[in-house]
Amino acid sequence: MKHSSVGPQSVSNFSIDPEGPTPRPQSARSAASGFPGWGAAPIVTWGLLATNALVWFAASTDGDTRDPQVLIDFGAMFGPLIIGGEYWRLFTAMFLHAGLAHLVMNGLGLLIVGRLVEKSFGHLRFLLVYLLAGLFGSVASFGLNSVAVGAGASGAIFGTLGALAAFFAVHRDTFGNTGRQSLVGVLMVAGLVLASGLQTEEVDNWAHLGGFLAGFLIGLAISPRYRAVAGSSGLHRTLVDTTSLASRWWVAPAVVAFLVLGTWAASARLPEPAYPHTALAESHYREGDSARALAEADEAISLERTAARAYYIRGLIRLDQGNVPGAVSDLTDAIRYSGFNDGTTKREAISLLVKINARRQRHGTSTK
Image (cartoon, rainbow, N blue to C red; front, side, top):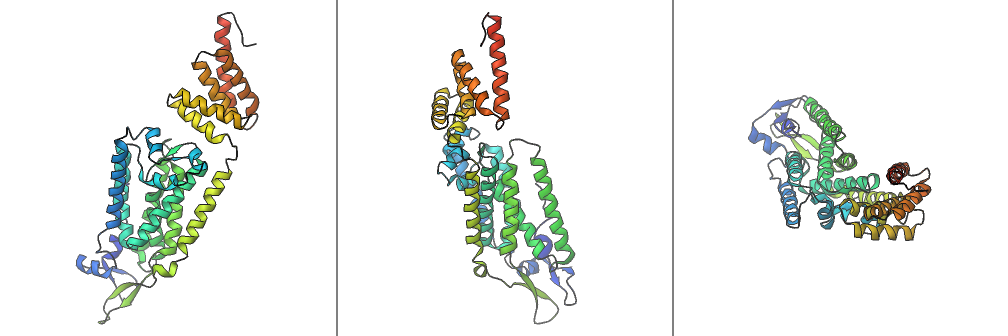
């Protein structure tokens, strides 16, 4: 995610000619004083980087941070648990990372983009963009990819990239061609990174897209509005922010309201009461914990007699245990209850029954 040529560096090193908006090169020292906030250290960016590293280190002491169970234990997103009331996972997942490589890649992205946005927006506005856009990314992931275990700061980082695009969109006239070119550059970088994510199943593209869109909209709402003000000599103009964050007080409550509404809508998409237990059963089974998987599958079936996926998972467990008649019964129920709504479960159950039947026929028996 290299885009060092895109950012406030390209708009800070200039003074504005009184006769027009065309940027004119200026010394670095003068630029730092002419662009509000550019000389301030990006302390929030460094704080977020340190927080992510500390959380990863704490999780790594409990096991491999690529292990889904370790991530869940430390607050990763998992739809069934969120539906069960653990909504705080939408926030904590933003600070977890699945392995050192994941942490390093996101850290580099935050270091590159975060400091640019923090210097352009200021400390508090940057923090608001990061947290609120990150939460939007979490909600998008929860609503559209609810069974997966989700962790990472990438949704928030994409939010800061969206805010950077919003910054240049707001100042496309103030900064002239430089601002417009920077806007195009940021959008190209975002598009390329989003497109590359579509090639990898492990990438949470919904979190990326949700974070970017939220960051852009929030950035439009709270971005500083710089205006060129003539100096005493009349030869140069300096940039002055004509808005305050206090004047945009309504942004945070509005975003929180949308987050609550989005979380409610995502939960409403999964009305089946057995769903959380079915998803947990499948997760435990994949991790090799058959006892917990069987307990969750039994609970799912007790709550929803037609929970096709739960029957399928229980059938797999019984087959592993050598209980072939029990497995055949559960797989048959999985096919019966899957109907037209769960084609994946039906196909998998039929395929497994065919294999069981072929095996039994070789030994002189049949499932009939």
